[in-house]
Length: 302
Image (cartoon, rainbow, N blue to C red):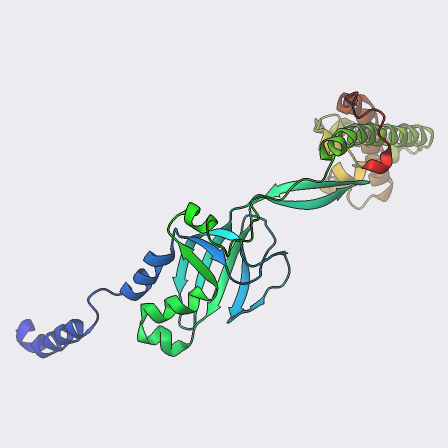
């Protein structure tokens, strides 16, 4: 009975299925097969912030729009990692292969970090081209953005390659690194000295200003006793911290007693500063010696 009742509907569904393409997504797969894993030479300027994630570049013809990032000139060697086809665009996810150096400032020194630069090229394609599922037409649009090659060697042999294989470190960069290592160690030790001076001054002030009020003293003793359980020894967390950084919460039963709370916080602060004076010396770092070939170079060469 069920088959008889729903037979016409099942027949209609069967006819619809036979009218559909044999392989759903076969068009996207065909485009992806041509491009994914291919080596390319870019035909347009591109941008990336080189943080290991794909950075969006909107591409319309030869025009590229990106919010920021380091520019890469046309002719850059890259590899296609992924490809997606949408209704009005094709998204090419590529990784620039040449070593890229990004500058950063540390004090008076300009340092350079090696980064992986990834780019997402969102290539505008007319909707009717996508709708027609014409792989060759899509290929021609993508070819205005990048030339495709089967191997790295073929791409490097192309006259379109801009020749950038790797960014070069500045001249005398080893000298810069040697001076930076000395400067960084000295700055670390100087910061430790300054924090210990502050802790010593604060501890002396707290000890001198202890209030004789019994409620204050009770809070002071309780705060000091609780803070003795504080075990932080991580140098990066200790550096630049204050007693407020690690302040403990006042017990609920004393939260309305301002005198007791003042003592509680002062007791904590005293123990904190004494602990800093005890623990920070372990954070001093050894200042490296400059190699003899760099020992006579001036700070201006940083």
